[in-house]
Image (cartoon, rainbow, N blue to C red; front, side, top):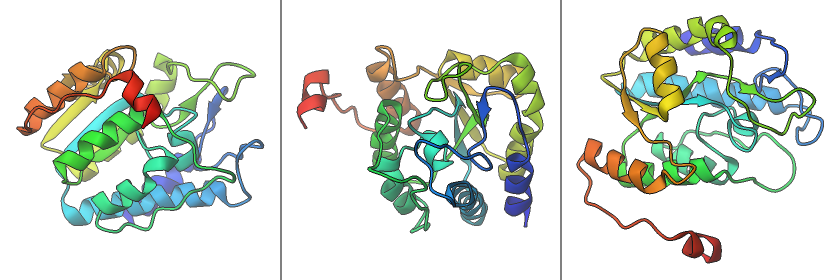
Length: 223
């Protein structure tokens, strides 16, 4: 019931130039029950995280239009829903949108590492919705301080529910935002904009993983 109450409360938030994937309808990509599917994805994830006593959280800044806006899951695109399900012991998360599955570069890097760690990690965002530019729903922007404060209760509620022992903030923006909300975290470089290799090395060090050479951009394109 805690997971259900959290999801229902989050679905009630409405802000200008912000897409709430747990309530809103995207005319371009959604099917009639998309918001309900995303609510279910989140509710099931939180319930399973509590069952498994997940102790680590990775926190990014906000949802992106190619990832969490479509899936309702932070740092997770549609190409990695199967990986998400496996990491959470067969969790029945579902694709919510119509058409082919869409990928996101950051999610690809994150899930490549999660596959190596092979233990449940709860993924979340400081701002748990998708902020976009005015009249450009398929764009990403950084949430404002006002938006962060409006949704701050959800961030703290998530922390209080899971009681994580370790929080890794992905990117400087996320780390500063987490700090502004009064929570301590370990900062990791965001994998975008040339930070992929640094991010990989930092996560390897945090989890004691053997170093693995990151593929080149060319090999990523042709694989």
